[in-house]
Length: 238
Image (cartoon, rainbow, N blue to C red; front, top):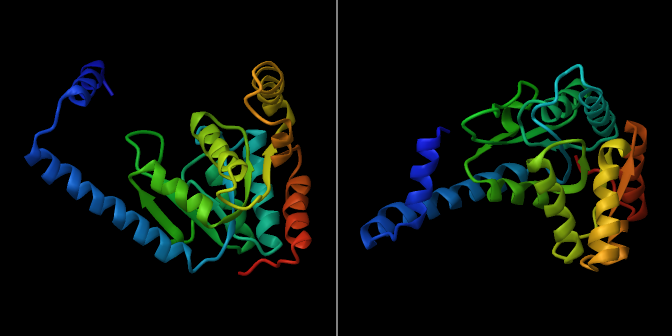
C-alpha cells in the first residue's frame, strides 16, 4: 500500500457515513460475513475436530522450523488427527505438506491478502476455505480444533496464539492443549510475561502459565496431544 492510499484510507475512517452508504455498503457486508460463517461451518463440521498448527508465512523450506512443522503434522496425522493451518506458505505449507504426505486430513483456512498469502498446494481439494475477514477465520480455527501447536511466527501467529489462550483463560472454550514449539524462540516472550505482566503488574494469574507447554521436538508435541486425548478417554474421530 502506498502512502497516498494509506492516507486516503485513514481519512475515510474519520468521515461520517450517510444513510445511503450505510444501507448499501455496511448492510451488504453483513451478508458477506454470514456467508463466510455458513460456508466454514458447513465444510468443517464434516471433518471433525482437528489440531491447528500456527506459524510464519515467511519461513523457507530449508528453515529448521519448516522441517519441524512438516514432521509434527506427519506424525499427528499418522496418529489419526486432522491438521488445520492458515492455508498459506511457510509453516502453514509445511504442516499441510506433512499431513498430505501421511495421507491424513489436510485443511487450509486461507485469508485473502494483497501480499504474501496464497493457498499452498498441499491442502485437500475439498478442505480449502478462503476468507476475507480475519475474525471469521479465527472462529473456524477455534471451533474445530482440539489442540493448538504454535511454531515461530510474527504478529499473525501471536494473535492466533493469544486468541486461543484468552478463550481458554476466560473459559469460553475447554482447556485444550496449547503447545509452543521452539524454546529458544519463545523464551524471551515467556520471561517478559513472568517478570513484567505477572510479577511487576499482576495482570495475569501465575496459574495461567500452565495453559501452555513449550517443547522442542515433534515427538514431544505429539505426545502432549496424545496425553490430552487419553486423559479424557477420547479418540480421534476421523
